[in-house]
Length: 297
Image 1 (spheres, rainbow, N blue to C red):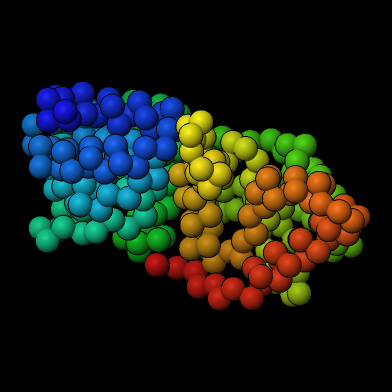
Image 2 (image 1 turned 180 degrees about the vertical axis):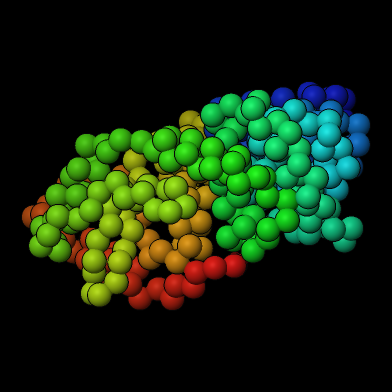
């Protein structure tokens, strides 16, 4: 019955399921198929909402994002600041969506996009500034593009707001830090802010290499419906996947420690401290063995 929904109705449906973090891949696939050919009749708010919802839900939809790029590019003047930020964040979060034959994605984030962001600079809210920051990282560092970037002044504000939004260490993080201390023999650096604005939970030296360690508690994972599988309950959120991808693209060796794996070490037979040591050593060894290439992906 999706064909009976208005453009705003389709967007609101996608937004609702994404916000509630209900795992409904078949529904999102149906929404993508229904929305893509109808975007011309969607309002700018509906278009940006659809993009945000699919990025938040982590549901791949390359054809839909192609259509969004083609439709939004000539209508950028109609988008409110929130819409511009949602569009930017959505494209950055999904990574590198398929480029349309008409070059829509390139046009969407061309010079006009930067001009529109600068014109709305005083109207962006804090969350929207952080969204623009991760887009700037994606556009410039991951994609190697300079055209379409906002002014230096707006980029500085985005960076400052993004850095200010970093969280505080959790009890789980403290426990992992203590185990790292026992393993490496020195206290690891904690809450390290890197030039791109991200905060690393821990930074350790291991076998001659620097390794970033991220402790991922429950908030780093997308909630799922009661009928979802265990794998869906343990699926990283879109924000977590974005951070992991961007850190690796900046050249970082990365260890991500899921809370449920760490908790299992307490339930397993044997010395908890020894199990933690083995777990961390194996994870760090794997990170050091990775081939790391920084720069344009």
